[in-house]
Image (cartoon, rainbow, N blue to C red):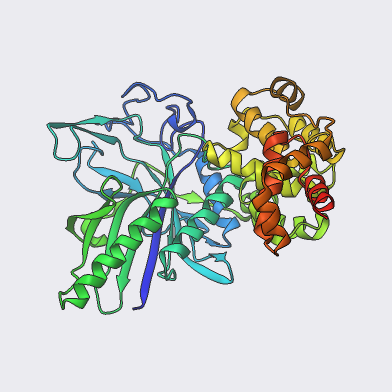
Length: 465
């Protein structure tokens, strides 16, 4: 059954201040601020207050539009999107509708180009805090979030599977990080509303999908739900649903509203914004090297396998680390370890390199010790794990935990293991390769990783003859 998916992705920008006032942007704070402490009359929507546009936000949005090959409007303006809800006390949201910042453009995912419809700027509403959960006793409003700058990136319905939607969002988030407008390690929220339809059914909008992992879960659930309705001959009606991650399901919110229902009007308190060519070209020339460009360079200049290069460039800080470490050691060795053992350890701890406490010189020093044969690959991996946990350099970790490559009478150890495991020896001589792996593993456990796996294998094979 054919599936069509379009995404409306909202990204909180990491500017110093909010989009229409001078209040501090809370996304850059390490700790959650107390409710309603980062506010002013404008954030609260008090009568008589007037917004003022933040030039830095416009420049950030222009960066994104240029990176995604969008067509920038020579002149744009803000509009009032009218709706009545406690999270927007002035009863309208300042957004863009008639003439957004940019139109068209696209993002290549694999071999497929995902077309974009528009990119525009807007303010985030306040945060509703449901005491007792949804349907609980009462709801509180925290206006710290009101006025956080957002960009919204809207695609055509070109996505055809939950997996493709996840890949698109992962790549989009990576580009935004390379541009320096979004930081996944900060408090900034990256979320999407998904429009999804199955052949023979109406389009359903699913709101409140945060991040890139949940998009796949939400869309899989919705495809299953709509598919079951169609199989039973039940008409899928157009509506807006909400993703509930706790239940792993979507829930009905309301009938799908049309854009006309928002009663957009020109925002009279903000001037039109003229985007002259000089300003656009200055921003274009200042764009950094983007992930696809860096991927091609890593493969060509450093000789990295494509999978290794793809893994490294998917995280800006890992790509920066690789470039620095590759100056002091074989780039292919650096690439293999950074994309393998290091990234696996960081993922296990749900950390990015820049927030792990690790230092570039620690990684370089460890790899030099491994290359010189002073430590085995198994123990080098253990050192990486302990460096993340203890926030200490490799030399100190090796001394503390005894991870160094010791001088061993390897033949004596192997002979002892062969003597204790006569059944495995017989199985190997009868043609059992698994028995050889077992014996090597027993020796590695006995030596606690202080002997190289290849040296162990050679010794076992020699003494089995």
